Length: 234
Image 1 (tube, rainbow, N blue to C red):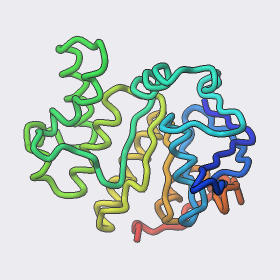
Image 2 (image 1 turned 120 degrees about the horizontal axis):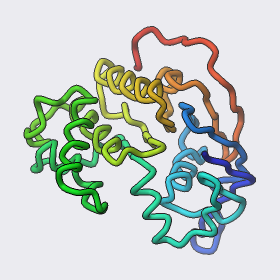
Image 3 (image 1 turned 180 degrees about the vertical axis):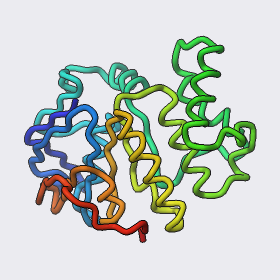
């Protein structure tokens, strides 16, 4: 599904280049659950932005579902991002005065899906994260864990091929964080591709593989053969 080769990203700060990525190479197959870890400044956030089409590399090759992103216009990238990618963020990014239903509907507003089908997709997505009874509750009245569940439902509603989760437990207590990771794990078990960015080892270990970043490069890329956590994230 995803293949990157010698990926580089440089930023100019007052004419001084900062090398955020220094030649990153790996591939992710359809249906994998991969965690990308690393300390602040390791390049993991820059990498996520490029993988999710929010930024472009300054060097190297990125192929998504067989097509190089350098062959695609910004409009084409936006279309693929809306159709094939779902996003879960640390800060939830919900509109607090809108209901759960309205928040989950937002990605569908840019599609040509008919209203009846749209309602079915929204209801199914909300039920899948255990919030069916909160469908018409304002998002601002939910707990942090419930808000992140809504964010996951919103990520699912377009039936994407890959879900990007950026520090999804960062603003949650341990129990809520555990529930969110169990939901992401269950999505993977049902065939979804999940790419998780986190600095927490116990969160990362819900995946089947950990890519460790350091100084803009891949320090290690290893499968997880055994779980070392014991029901706690922090």
